[in-house]
Image 1 (cartoon, rainbow, N blue to C red):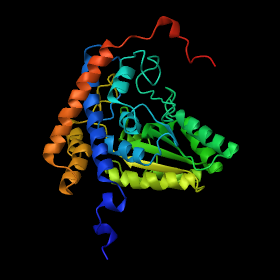
Image 2: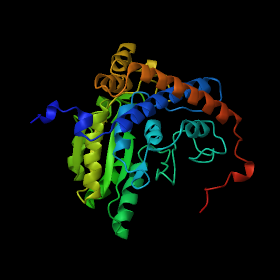
Image 3: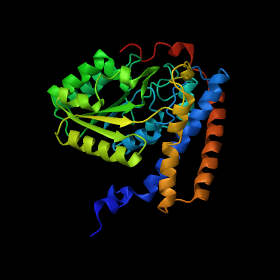
Image 4: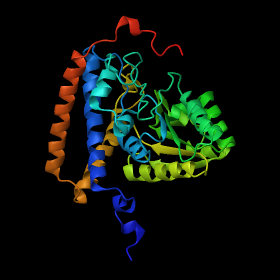
Length: 334
């Protein structure tokens, strides 16, 4: 019998060829869209950009563990790859970034990164860092009160959010009531400019899980299979009454924190380049080629197709109407 460690992870985890290729396309589309957003920002056409570059494997692996339109997701501002994997399009993202009327997240009325979709059960977070983890606990508690079963909530955040009081409140409530929630830390080593060793007073973020009465797991956030396996197990545990999980995915952002940041002030170029050598997209692409799931030529054709899609979406978003003045109070009052 073949040993488990000799079985390729995509086979062991039951991931189909179709899902793997779609996942690679999503990662490439996210990176290409991010590239375009930075250009649009420099042109004054996209006011504010938050990059997901470097986080693609973490976000795709988490998306694979979510039952789209059934489970609830509360992302944070860096989760563009995640929401694209859940069903938002390149055009959706560009409409959102350029604050156009047809932006599906907010009708052009929220700052970039406040992703939202009733259809996909993506819940918009607050601008206050870490406060959306209280929303995760609240949604999960609502399921408990209403007696709804087989639904889990996933909330994602950076390691900097763990220093906020709201983060503590959300995890405390989830732990006390053993709620069906999964808290995913995308640990990219910096809370804007503050390095993780000056932000987290523990060897890992996941080590804090014990203090909140929940499971704690650490994985390589640049390994999409490791992330998916851990996220899938956590979501299944939550759905089946096993309580919450704190999942830490160690990764890195390749660009500044946002378009308003200059990371040259606190990061050395050598450090950034060392992490770029571990690019999760290149790593995933290499795996798929090595295992005969896709060829190099097919990947290049995919990239050309994605770039054409980004070009068309950019033109469509630039031509899209602005939200009308009379819509300014929409969704503000209940």
